[in-house]
Length: 202
Length: 192
Image (cartoon, rainbow over the protein chains, first blue to last red):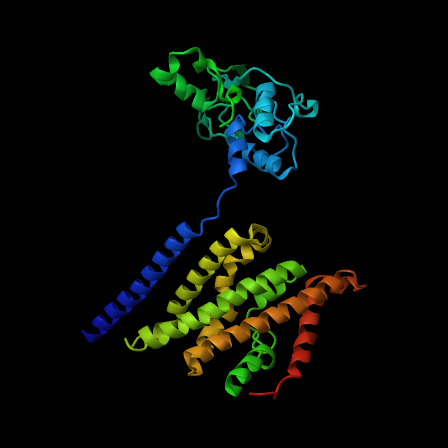
């Protein structure tokens, strides 16, 4: 009986110590939080979030970090196009410049679509998709969720049977823009048709 | 006062954690490729070592022993060390993001640095007071940092030295570490 009590005491004591350290750490985590760079956040908010990698960075956020560091120029984002460059230039107080040709050309918003009778269920496009817009499982049909697709084209090259087409996007792929349209208050005026890239940066 | 000085010198030079007690060899070999990373590692480990030495001494004397569960010191100390490392990581991430990136994986690995646990356990065995325990932890930290920085400087020079192919990389580093241990053996017998 005494042994069981001792064991309980030991568990309670160590548990109390662990809880005390846990509390201390969670307090410290909140108190000494590393502040994210506000400039990176602002630049990232202007970028189109296609995660296409045409800027030669792994995604929009790494490109935003590179711009903030001064490593990358503001004209390397083809999906953002001229409007995106203008928004970046206004945000950073620089002169707009034409899109850099080596990074690609501006295209209207597109979305991928899988020709369903040709898909062999190989899973390669799902692994390639940066925004998880393709649903499916190995040996089952894959389908693109067009509202989530950013038209980055990264799934086209891996497809072994070339069954992915680009079609005009059903709606501009900026999620905040679409939320404005869904909101009846915001959808009433002509400004609802604007994309965020055309708005003055906050 | 003399006692304090002896503990400090003893921990830094005579009973150096790395070269005399062979504790903490993983970061000693792992983070000694670049001098600035070694300096950062020495500072981070030193902070953890000193803090954990004091905290684990207090835990042992004021909680575990009165409750009669002094035998459970190893898991309790590991808890202390893990929490201290987390705290160091938080502070470092905020204060010096660049150093945080340079140290990378080796920062959480301070938790498993046996020098930290070793010093905490030695403190309890040697029946020291709290001040002596903290001082011994600090001395061990200085000793660890000194050896790590010296070794990193040696290894940076070795990069450009005409080392035979068979000895390149880890073998010559281990030979160097052995020679350093021999040099530090010259301090044996000094103090206690």
